Image (cartoon, rainbow, N blue to C red; front, side, top):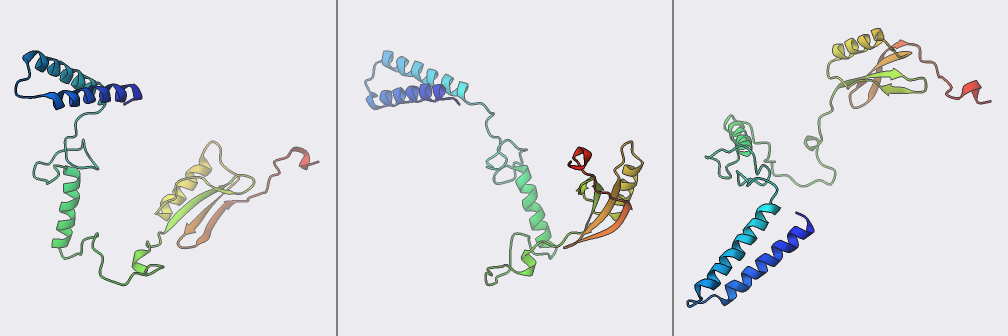
Length: 189
């Protein structure tokens, strides 16, 4: 909605407010037709300014999402999430949203911190430093297969290495010999 549309709609609504203040039981029909025309004008301006469809659900997160008539907010996506939480509660697991009562800690407790994730990082030597050359993998064999494919590719790097990341970094294997390459011609003369 741009400024001109807001201003025009505001004027039309203020005019309707003035009509409402002077309405009485003996208002002539000519005046009522004038109110009707102003009301239609305001509705037409409102139709022009509204850019999206009317919401199909009463959900603030998914206003135009799929509809579930049995849900209190008519949102299928939120109701599916609520059903999964009820199902896990029924199966004996506590729901993820409920936390046991405990004293708040300034630094948190071990359960609040995310679990360390084990990943394998494929890296290539670019002549100056090691750089990530692919997506970190959760499977070591997949990461080694990726690096083997890179070495067989049309433009292989000088060297590759596989780094194991699990709360710390550990170089597992290096293919090739990384040689530092001076980027300045003639060796910075």
